Amino acid sequence: MVAVEKRNLAKRVVFYAVGIVVMSFGIALSIRADIGVAPGSTMSYAWSKLTPLSVGQCSTLFHVFCMLVQLAITRRPTLKLALQLPMSYVFGLLIDLFLWLAPVSPQGMPNRVMLLLAGMAVFSLGIRIIVGADILLAPPDGLARTIGNVFGWPMSKSKLVFDIVLTAAAALLTLILARDALLVIGAGTVICAIGTGPAIGLFTKLFPIFDVSPEGHR
Image 1: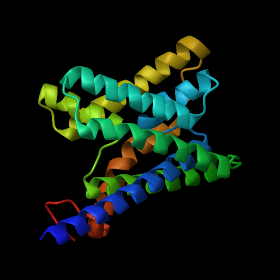
Image 2 (image 1 turned 90 degrees about the vertical axis):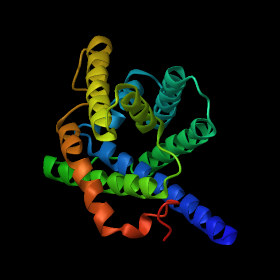
Image 3 (image 1 turned 30 degrees about the vertical axis):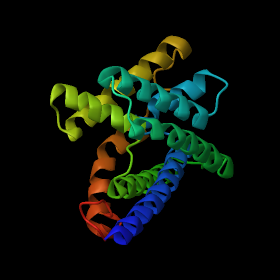
């Protein structure tokens, strides 16, 4: 029994690591489409546009900010919360790596839309793998869940509210500091807001193999 549990934990860790790589690759693709980033990336991308820092560095800083807000709300430091820090650092490094490997945005709106859709599909698959591994949530998602717990909301509602507030805050920030509210928000933001949830649901049905949580050994 112990051996089975150890094998299952090892499988979960591997899937989680794969999910982080896949999700960061998809985010990089959606950024390179250059028609607006996904709601969850708006603040990090806004910071990168307003500072000398890279997108990956800003993503790490934003994740740390989300961790600190979680800690302020719960006032309970936990191992899972602490483990979000190295995960956030690696996640930021991977985003910068994939952006470096694909340094140029495609020409023409049809090509950009196709790249955005590909990126959305890839990071949705990454999210599906991470959720199936059931180890850690990304700090923004963890904060959304914490907020939902405070107000008694389901994760679907708290995530929606969180993304709306985050996108509005990024638009306001770029409007004030860069006089351009559409610096990081565009058609791609709307497409990702509408399409990410259904894409994750589709991948959940198509790939049950990724469900390796303790409740459902595979």
